[in-house]
Image 1 (tube, rainbow over the protein chains, first blue to last red):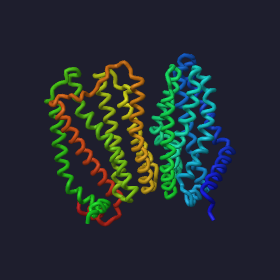
Image 2: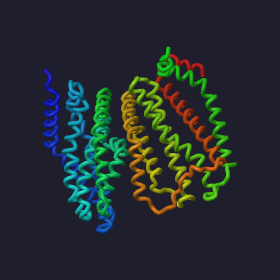
Image 3: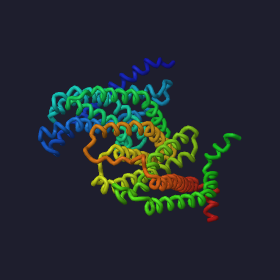
Image 4: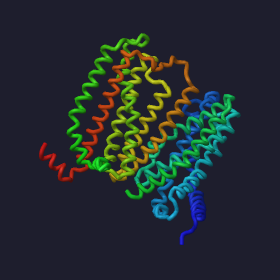
Length: 227
Length: 246
């Protein structure tokens, strides 16, 4: 007898979360990468606080985006290697909902830590005081979209032996709108303008990607399983 | 009867034979339109009072930009048809449309840069339109890269079709976002706007060039698709017979 959909999703969610938290590289590596790249910015450009303050919002956003891209390769790969991806595909429950729980867990172990760490990096880049709240809020909403959109790339490339760089190539153009509204909201807040509009647009992107991406992810996984 | 033509379209052999008949006519029409448009636009259209002769690159730049964007939609729709009706031919059209579209987008960027130098005094500006075009180029590159990395042809076609469709939904969002981003950061340069109030003497040759470019696109797409058909069907009797005849 199959379990109800709610039970299945709940079980899958807790199983994924346990797995991700126990595999420390999965949540630690993107965060370490985030800090390291931000360290390179003053070294490569200039330690001048005035200059860094101008660059900070965009830099933190760009690096958060790269860290998310790097973490995507493992999203379905381990499941494919141990056969649990096939189990997902033949499950009686709708695949888009099942992958949705996976992507949510991915956000919990990558997007959320990046968001929580961002104030520290803001300090390192002498981000002005007005920028902290908008930075955290914009990343909180924006990284959700990044996970959902990025998972499409992960699903399409999971059957390929080297998917990492390819995911970045095919997904990065879709990150442009999120980056624009994310980084711009922070910059505008520092300049003293209202930035709730940018956050609202980020929220709209999140709603769109949560609603549509799971279908593309499910289609991508089915294609990858056949090849 | 009503749907028969549609299912026939799915047959690569039927397509190959039919287009073989159309090709010479299409080639002649394309050549005529292109030649007329180029000679008229480059030689006879009046000079622009502000930009002098450098404005004439419009006759290359605008048609190419049109097809660069339209080509993405053609590719994505072909991909959708391939996914929905499982037509081999649609997959081949999609695969052929990707490099053509990427090349046209590249040409649009290059011709825009060459135009930008005398007009704005610089080859590259982070203008909304240019930035969107660059992102469009990246989208094409992504589809080509994804296609190239699969060994299994069917999986390659399906995966890149899904990616093209995701791209199709995203293009308006990307375009609007970049547009909004640019209006916020508008630098103090003289913004060149293509005046809709173009003089008819300048506009007619442009129209001829645009129609000619559409024909050229169709020609290139058919030729690429035919090459793809021969490549994939090389084990079949009818393709072997082609080799014997020609």
